[in-house]
Length: 214
Image (tube, rainbow, N blue to C red):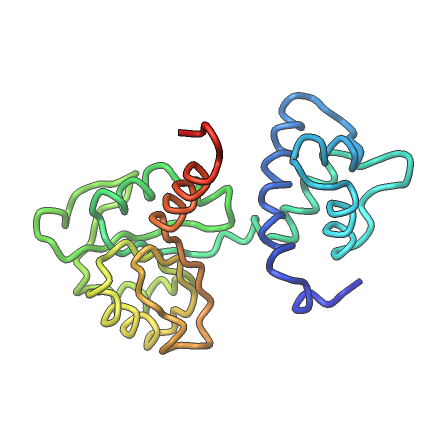
């Protein structure tokens, strides 16, 4: 089996899609599925699916397919979804509140333990059971509770100072909605950047280049 660090990110990025679909199958009572059936549902080739899963070991049998529950649990283990990494969210504006309220952090490997903002009108507000705290108390909170990951839902111009504060107290993992390029200054940080406008522009391209799509 290849070493985990040698597995391409393109493979890793397909795993959550496999996991979501397998969870759906499990909820419908499906017990077993073949790579051919998976490929028809996911729009990938059966060979691609087998190659992806073989990166982590053999989970199926030729001519028999995959046990849905087992494969679902194996992928959850590979992704680390039971780790419950302590997480804080910076920025309790519309985006931050939506993420805090509607993202299933616990199902996706994280545990949201704190929300911070600098605006007096937001401090003290309750969002999904958590009280928004003053960003001035960030260091004290992190030293006491030791979060592993920070979600950045703040404007780009505020991100540089906040990331520096977090980095200096040991937070090196970021889910970044801010458009600030963390890796440029902190190459050892682990960052997942989310650019919603990039996704929207990609859709615009697809519509513009598909006959009759508009």
